[in-house]
Image 1 (tube, rainbow over the protein chains, first blue to last red):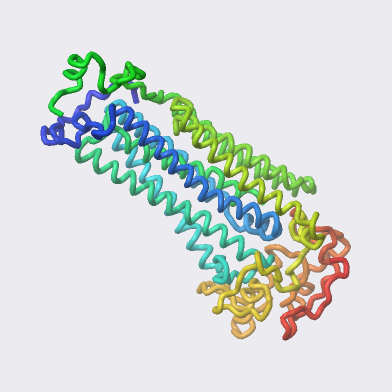
Image 2 (image 1 turned 180 degrees about the vertical axis):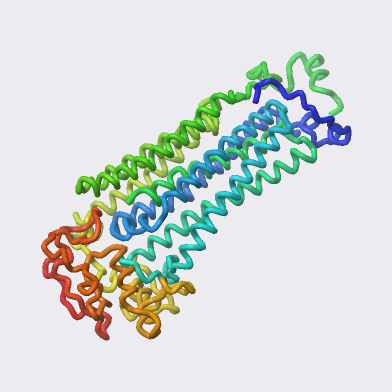
Length: 234
Length: 278
């Protein structure tokens, strides 16, 4: 990969070049003085939204800390029930996808349309991989053993009376995170559609790529903390 | 408006897009474009730190068994959380480009993290200082646990699992109900004691083999035929630690020594009176 501007080997049809959705033809909203201001405002808005996401997960982290202090036995047992290899694999998958998301922004800035699409596709594939590992190798197996949240709990070999509470926190924490992974993947699929259909993102217009990537990085950031808390700390 | 900005500018003598002249270069794009080598390096460092946090966890678990030591709980937490914080800073600074971005975005994030800190901090202070008001509030939150609930129903209405109308355990902890009824899985391995006792093709000893094999601390209350002794798990009576199978921290020394094995009576309590020292 070089840092030179893409020479774009594919002949772009006139229908795309002249579309009002092509990045060269897109203009800032009439209430903005410049496209830069529109971009900065959108990005600040995204950051404000991300803070509410951080506070959402902070509730889960706080619940984790409180219950861990109250029932250290159940929490120690709980992390022993989880396989760190699945957690570590999912961490690597998310880190890789965060890198491709950052690369997608860079490719949009450099008008590398082909590599923009490649990076988005890899990001979405990583999201599917993450969800696949989580649901097929973790949720499915654990629920089959009865390691279910709250009153659904029916694992016969439990040792601590508060283990059902541990599983509640595990499913709520990882479930809400998995929901964010799905939302992020859908967001990137939207970006992929517009990038493929209209070449809508380029050096002067890539707000949606940037904000989708910011959302994706936050999903990664939350997992960076969820992984050791759930799988490693005992 | 039929006038273009350029026409307005020449007619008015000032720029209507920038009337105060605060942004003389607004046509130029100053957006930071990341160097791909920098991004690859950050990814490599992040993957290395993921390896490091797992290695730390594995080495610690190995050392506790190999040297028979109990590392304090904070070693585990501080190690994992420091590495996670470094990773988080790397993602925020380089992938999210806060390092090259407007300071306002960083400020927004830091202010949010300050709120999270207050949120977490005051919860911890509350939980850690309840015993200063009421002595009885201190029991469960101390490291090491008290074994509370092992032969008593969880009696804390605020934090214990609330039983729905579907599950009536008659005061038993939910895990004892689960131990009797077992998982819905077709795998006989996860069936409960009732299935093992009713099905002539299943041997109850197999259930207890799995149960004590995972974590043999003491004879279970539902182990009426004393498989604990029959399967040879009662051979560590001279060891003072409550944990007789493998090294773990968080258990109070001698905790289970005087827990007499017994079944639940009809009042939902235990026939044994447990230890006086609890």
